[in-house]
Image (cartoon, rainbow, N blue to C red; front, side, top):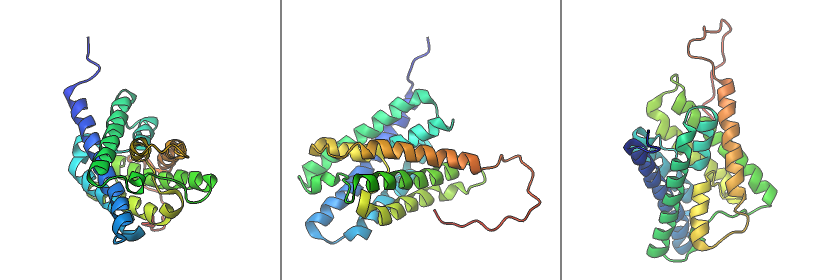
Length: 238
């Protein structure tokens, strides 16, 4: 009888754990350090999140695909780019990595800024809407560079990291720009914060599904004939 797990799946899950651990320790750690010192500012924190994603995609993307986000994993499965069988393993690794990251921050820095937990600064409706929108943009970019052979694969880490940083820059002051249930669950569990955390579980899942399906609808099959109608140059905007 075939085993329900194998060494390759264990390695891939481990890479997801390591990547999500790095995301929480660096990103949430930046929030905590800025709270203590005031040296990073909002821009510095946003750039930290973007840079750690970029670095970890470059380091582990060839092993696991570098999801580091349950919403991304589920969206890949919904769009048939990932096996549903592997989803529980990836999500478990991501959440465990986030929890271990939050525990590390508590041990090293202490109970500062609620360990970088995400909380809405505006209304619940504003935060929910922004999380859906931000995650949709992120997933749109991810699925484009990860699944379409016409995209330049070497720039995937830069494109995705830049999108995370950009989303955090403009959406962070209102919603916290989580875009990632694991990133929110880890600090919230260790800090004992439950208020409004449902936003960061539900909204990213909806947003990632929207972004994934939108790109699937827009893309053309690689074998389709070229359109005889001139196509305007595409914007590089996220």
